[in-house]
Amino acid sequence: MPSWVTGQPFLIAASILAVIVFCRAQATYWIARGAATGALRSRFSAKLSGPGVQRATRIVHRYGPPVITVSFLTVGFQTVMNAAAGLTRMPFGRYLLAMIPGCLLWAVLYATVGLAAIEGAIWLAVSSPWAAIAVGAVLVGGLVWWALRRRARRREDPVAPLVAEQQ
Image 1 (cartoon, one colour):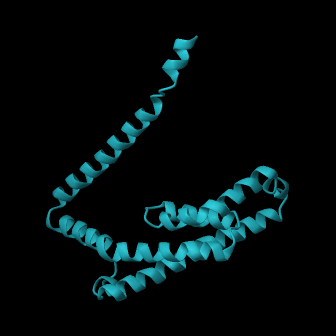
Image 2 (cartoon, helix red, strand yellow):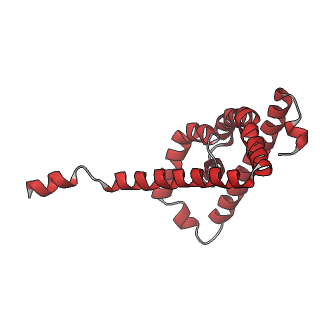
């Protein structure tokens, strides 16, 4: 993170970060919306305007705003949701009302915990590269363990034994 952000008081840093994430979210939305408009004018327009697509678009328009707001608390998912809002041509007013609180949440979190975590990681890497590698390995190992455990739970279908007993 540039020092012109990290060296600022909290309100200034959070404001700078809010403007950055606002511009990025807007760019993602409008690029995706432009792509959707272009696709609707192409030979694929019939496939993109069918009843299934229209139903999915209505669902995103109805339930999407809260998901857009919450997506700013995740890593990576916010870009997908901003693009999905543009691709489904979510009305701009509804999108904007969902995006602004998300941007503010992201800026506050990043200006507090996010910057501290980045500075801590840089300090650890500079003072002890082996410790940084160990911490990274533990984090990656924890994520892999969590993902495998989650996958195993999904495979355990509690309905399957009941169906087998009835036959």
